[in-house]
Amino acid sequence: MMNPYIKRIKDLSHQLDPQILTELEGGFVDKKFSKGACLLRPGQICTSHLLVKEGVARKYYTHNDKEITTEIYFHDDVAVSLDSYIMRKPADLYIEALTELEVTLIDYSQFHKVKKKYAEVMMLDKMFIEYYAVWFEQRLKEFQTMDASQRYLNLLEKEPRIVRLLPVTIIASYLNVSLETLSRIRSKIASE
Amino acid sequence: MMNPYIKRIKDLSHQLDPQILTELEGGFVDKKFSKGACLLRPGQICTSHLLVKEGVARKYYTHNDKEITTEIYFHDDVAVSLDSYIMRKPADLYIEALTELEVTLIDYSQFHKVKKKYAEVMMLDKMFIEYYAVWFEQRLKEFQTMDASQRYLNLLEKEPRIVRLLPVTIIASYLNVSLETLSRIRSKIASE
DNA sequence: GTGATTATTTGACTTGTGTCAAATTTCTGC
DNA sequence: GCAGAAATTTGACACAAGTCAAATAATCAC
Image 1: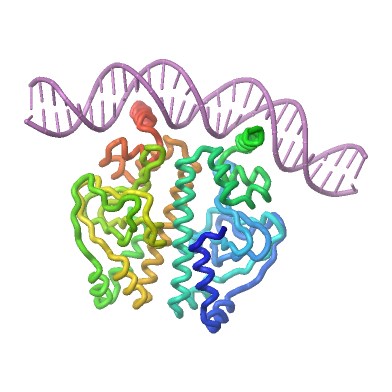
Image 2: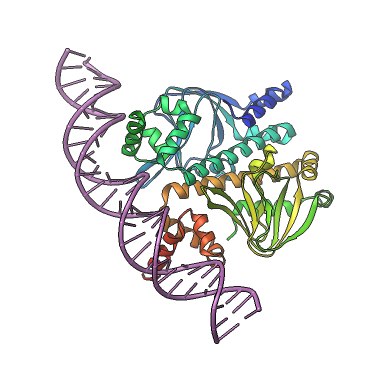
């Protein structure tokens, strides 16, 4: 189920020296958000990674009053506006709690210090971003090669939790189709 | 013109210790390709970065016999199949010379050795991938929010060299529209 | 230059998907 | 359980963009 590269990152991070882990955890803060709460909004600078412990969140931006959902986070996923985080500039998107949500905030500056000190942490961070880039490349390919139905079926196969747990509005905005089109796709599939 | 983040990466790489530069260059090999030559094809493992010194190249994949161009490289751009390179698995795309081409191959294993030895090189590599991820995110956004004409106008503004120097076939496949549609878009713009 | 090939444009038609509006179903609070 | 709100479905229509085919323009070999 889990991507093998993500698995490798996890395995390696569990093998880190306890001393390093302690230093890393010095920059961790646990926080709870209620459903609908906004963890990041346009104009704010994203100064931490958000590690989801419990609940579901999403990242989205708006364009012509339409919401476009770009990522959906479940347990153990990491939410961050990479653009805002690395360039240290204001974000142009929202990160929102879709349910009651518990996250661990991994503060930029503490994480940065530990990365500078320990090459293996820098390496893990690099691996995380590599995975992120490959994920984006894959997702772009899906938009370039699949029509709406194919994207839906693909999502159903690769991310069944999204289809199972989230309202049509969110699923549609993640697939970048209108509510109505998604509804028609589903009824067509059901009638086959 | 140049992206500020890319500029920062370049500046930092010019400030590297001469000793490090020498070690890095130990893994460099210059190579020439003739127009139409293939630098990488599906099934091969991408074991180096290709730094373009002279000429133009592109990356593309095929889907239902249609070519989809994902990146176009000019002087100083770096071509690599990230997926194949980091996972060390066979590529599923082509990298092709669009003109007579001169590149510097940066070999994986030598580069890897130097990265392990010098944290600043690892850092630069990480910054490169961060940029790549942000670039992909941006490109995905373009496909999600712009129609064919907007994508063309956007390309004209952001990457005029592509529009100016390359045949319609390539431009169309980079914009993910048909030849005919691109042709109509251009004539419509010309008539305004 | 001339003919042959290739690239580009134009035309006619089809289709996927969006939009707006209305109907229906599901969810909520009380 | 019921009223009202919200979410989802269905219908009618419009339009962007694809496809196939033919015409025209540009390029190349000799």
